[in-house]
Length: 289
Image (tube, rainbow, N blue to C red; front, top):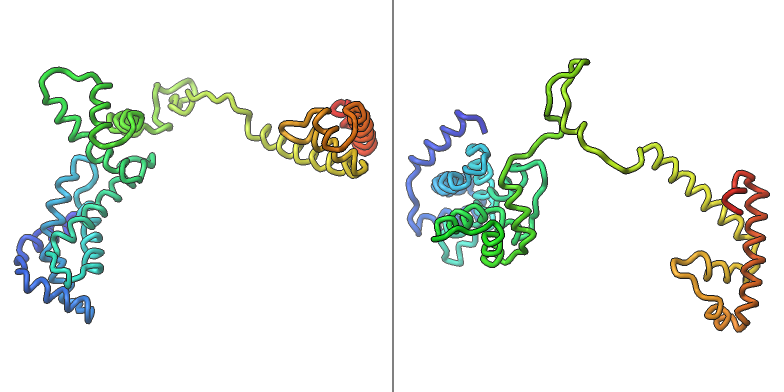
């Protein structure tokens, strides 16, 4: 919403007459029963004061108050669409929740490029931490940061770790990784924060190469396994292809043979696998040995 439109909206809202209870219910009934657009317009205009007042309460988050008003207007329209006149509740009471929810969602989406938590407890922490911290600062004595976090945690029913994380996020603005942290070098370019980040992970081409090689070797092994008979395949699967391979004794009990016999079957099966792999893929000599 641009500045002229915002000023016009505020002026119109301040001039709009208040609605009496009976008039409000009549307009709500007209909108609900026959979708009377004029009735909806009167309800919305009469309650834009509520939107503007609530937007001013959220101005300390550093977002445009015009945008907050626009989001609140969306919440007001949502409230009008859902309002049930038969419940005999004033529209302003009902609409307040929708207006606040719309503004809070907008703030959570736009206050930081880092997406914050969206659970009810995380929202309560985000919107109440500053207020609680200011109240605690006015109490006699000096609270340490840990004591302040503990009291906020108890008041809002969230973990200490969540309080500490949110406090750190609210203590400073986002920092761009492309921000320059030192002057121009010999090539005329400065050092960006990104340049100072160090990663021990493999380069992307190495990761891709290892992934492709791994998938290829799995395919080779699958082909080699087809050379085993049923008992050999069973032993190899139980002993070599599971995260926790069975012992010779346990596998022997399962198959009804001695553990020495299991050892012999396993040895023969491994030799057959080596032979098949080396015959079809000579480059596997070092891996099959």
